[in-house]
Structure formats: structure tokens, C-alpha cells
Length: 211
Image 1 (cartoon, rainbow, N blue to C red):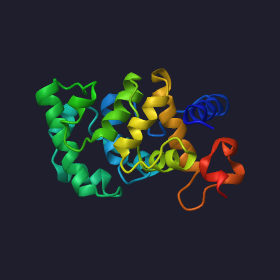
Image 2 (cartoon, rainbow, N blue to C red):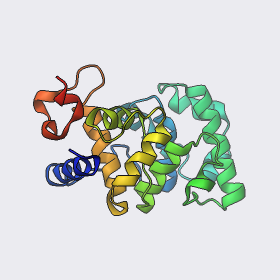
Image 3 (cartoon, rainbow, N blue to C red):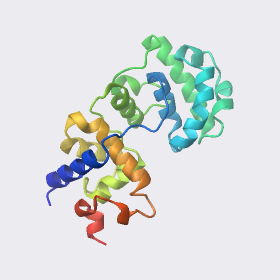
């Protein structure tokens, strides 16, 4: 099976078996998604969704959060991973959105990455989810299963994985393909014990072929 054939087979399977694939983070606007994604670094979406309702009620806009102190924000997010640094990032991020971007979350990867706490993965998520841009955010799940499935080869970094994936995935479905891979890695192709017996991708999977 060629790499192109593997991509086509896997993407076709997802299109049939997971027609709806969306972010599991709860948000109502670009700013809320940005905040949630920053909080989700090395933390579960479930935990983030537990803290964001009260956080968003207290700081519904960048202008509101820009007026807060990291200590203020920390009281709402103390149960997530690395809460101190994330509180600092959120306040600094809000301040920059207000002062540089007139209160609007940037709609491109370059400007998003100028915000404190925002790296390429976070920027890619925001661009894909909010503006349906062909950006592939590579988290630990996508990095892992792309190599297992055989979609990538000898990838050493998330950026290498991203480049190999977007080379073969049609641009119009890249935002959805991100969620396909992420959710499959989160619930089926798990790190320690992949659920191969429950996986419909067996016929196309490089890892399964070696078992």
C-alpha cells in the first residue's frame, strides 16, 4: 500500500464512520476558544470544561480579562495543569489582544503566535475551528497515531508530522481531519494500550500489520 493509498483509505473510513467530528472544548466565541485551548495544554478537555464556565462568566471579553491580575485568574483555573503560568499567559494574552488587535482575536497563525501562551499548535486549532482554515494542529494524540497508522514516517517533531499530513490531506478537509485523528487517538488508539480489536482502521494500519 502506498502512502497516498493509505491516506485515501483512512480518510474515506473516517468520512463514513465519523461524519461529525468537532472540538470537545466548550466555547461560544473566538476568545473563549483561545482561552480554552491555552488551558488545555497538558490537561484534559474535560477538566478545562469544568473551569471555563465560571472563568468566562467573570471575564467574558479580552477587555475584562486584561483588567484582571494573574492572581485573580488563578482562583478560577487552579485545578488545571500549570495554573500559575497559564494565569500569567491569559492576562498577558488578553492585554495584547486589546492593545494590538483592538479586542479581536487574530485570524492568522503568524499574529496568533505573537500572543503570550500561544504556540503553533494553539494557533492552528483556533484557525481551523473558528475560521475553517486548512491548518493541522498536532498534539500528542495526532503525533502518536499518525506514525502508528503509517501516515507519517520517522517524524521526530510535531512540525514534521504537520507537514507530512497536510501534504496528503485535501485542504478542504484538514480542519475535520484534525478532529478525526485526535478523537481516534483519544478514545481508540490510546498510548499505552491501543484498542485494536475495536478499530475499523485495521486493514490500513501499519502498526496492526506488525502484530
